Image (tube, rainbow, N blue to C red; front, top):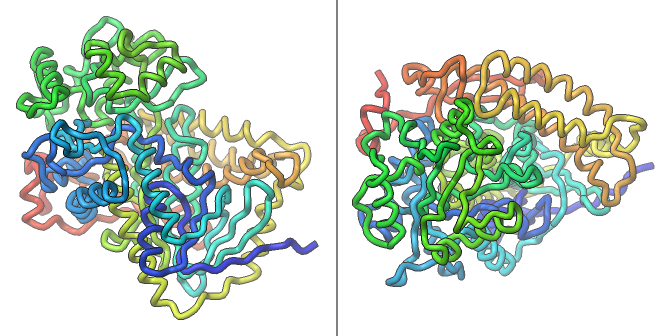
Length: 610
């Protein structure tokens, strides 16, 4: 029986309804293009709402010494100089305007006593730079963008999963999706597509990502022939909840440390003083008294004159420090560290961190104004993704654009806290603008091969016909546990080779899973379809991590513990599908940083080209 398929046509299709997708859709709609937004969940449920601490932008409201040049320096330094300097420059220069734009659109940011947008400190940032709304910044960002977006005329397809992007004569021609509620099938013709699907962290057992983060956007780009980059760099946020087990991995915002929270081991020692890297040695307080004086000064709203406490080192450093304390037998009761902000006035804690106060009270029966929190590293963000042109966000596939976490370039080997939200709105705007421009240059919609449509329909419905197979949830669970153990925060060549072998075994198992039931409201079917993407993105991570024989940023090799500036510091990994379906890896370098920008960086850390 021939399957019924609904057909649609739009100039621009945006896949994903988080901050990057909404900002892209707004910009494309403003230009007059017809825009469809396809999202896996409900509108308003995007992972962006879980971003708590703030959006980084050099507004210089809290400290007049801040500037885009300092923000650029911090981003490059935090990314261990492996980021695309062009994207870092664009981001640092344009982020303040994007924050002011959000305010004009109705975003209600916290205010300083004199009425300016308030900013808080975060790890790796020289000055207090994060514009915030308590600890619910992402939620306010999404609320504002949705309110703006729905008035621009875009059409929204909620609870749809995109299974394939089509290409005709070398350029994007549309995509195939199915409705997660009723299983209906849909073909969307498009002149251009913007990928804004977020990250891949559900491939790890302990993660802060919501259920949508299965990496399907990364896989869609890879399957259609786009180049992928830097997939070895997966950030483990140092502070996720670790107890009780039911909430393991849920994020504890870096804003807790930005507001004065200190990390202690089971002996009551503030251990971060023992883990300050040489490249940051002159920026961090070397005595507890000096650090606490800094905290009291900043949270009191005064100009910061003291050096920062070491709890505000970059996320890779703090996560590995907690891991080291655990390995040395000094972990908290349940295998992490204690994060304590109870020294601050209780009402101030409730005012500045209302979400964290209620989160611990309700989920862990802990009053953070009186007791320390138990925290530990959690898979949080992937710096790797689809390779994009820094000025247009177009991928290596014509007509396919990408923005936000699904794209790579800005963050290098490690992302600074707060740079994610400003990344979304800066590059979401650029992607939407150039996608609309590209669509106007196309005279008509390209035809999509019926055989390609038939093939993806057959592939999508095939799991429903399998009988007596394994539950797909078990395969996903085993995949996540394996990635946690073999491609987690500390890696070795032996573990990564084991991961690659295990992934092929999981691929075999996934082809035999039986979700049971029909198309209506069948989460087992959805999961059976997600496994292929999860395996491919996990393989990208493992291959890239195996090849990078050094430790840099979020990538730590126990068998190659040193950072090798002479070789690896100059090249980025690129993964591309071969004609035979194989996963191939190569290495490239970004263009040389111009002299005027190089002068902003620390010459002792930056390895000059010969």
